[in-house]
Image (cartoon, rainbow, N blue to C red; front, side, top):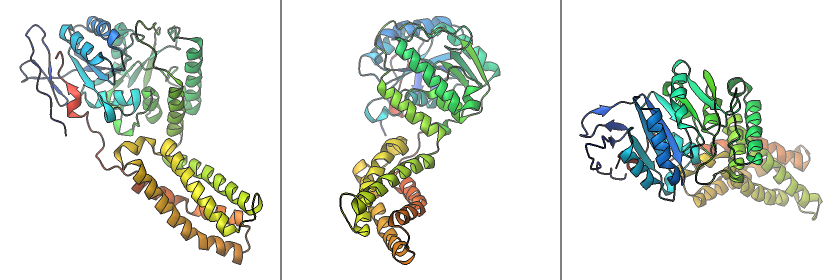
Length: 409
């Protein structure tokens, strides 16, 4: 546990706020300040945009019960720029700066950390690059009054996505939207024309944070796919970036595919898909050894095929099945050792049954191998999920104490 930072020294003119845990107090640190809305802004190297963003939000939200919460993963001077902007802002500004191992889940993880660190009835999420117009935040908040979620859409009504930096990015964004709507026709397709947007407002009581598995960029898609929500859309024009560079890359595409698979398929389904692929690898190696490049005894071939498929499955599970659980469990060498130990024991247990099926029941060796692999599937899943990837630390209940910094410090 890291020590909580000392409250900042504040002037009367700044009318700043002190943060202790998730509670915001006035300048003397005595009276809790409850906000109706928290505007969460995840940032990564957006120092050049911060001052303008805070000024425009302050002007748009003047007179409202709102705080700005910047969740920053930057490697530049963005935290310093947030502090400077906060000192002159008319709204309270807080900063969570994540470093090293705290930077989990990408942009979605940053948003989730911000949600846990706030206590408002409504939460607005927006980018820090000014492509989401700050002047639209009050409209989003008011629209969410009678629904669960208000979404700023680039594709609904008079919305415009021309601010995307290239035709390729517009094509990717539109294509991703079509895929998401097709995969979730009821929860996404019928209620939202732009599930890829990062600009929205939701009622906290309508979203179960324990159901979210933050990863990548698309936190709204995660919320929509896991909840049945009343949604209202408001068209908006996606603006041009004024400073900095787009963070979109091919890795985001990979993350999107992974996120879609995770949302559409449960963990056991993904484990089964990896297992099915591993079975193909296993049988292909065995077939190659028994009747292909060498005339190897089927028992020896089964052992070699098992070792290769066991290693294959571990690598695939690390990447596609249990990726979101790796941070809270043992280091990968120990996970690999546990995986190898269990699967080798399991393979040894299966081997007598393989021999029994082949020698006594005269079942073809490859078919017998497939049968034993299928029977062992449930045992493998239970061991891997309950032992290898069992978390050794409590789930995140709120942002780490050291992450919150006093506003206007």
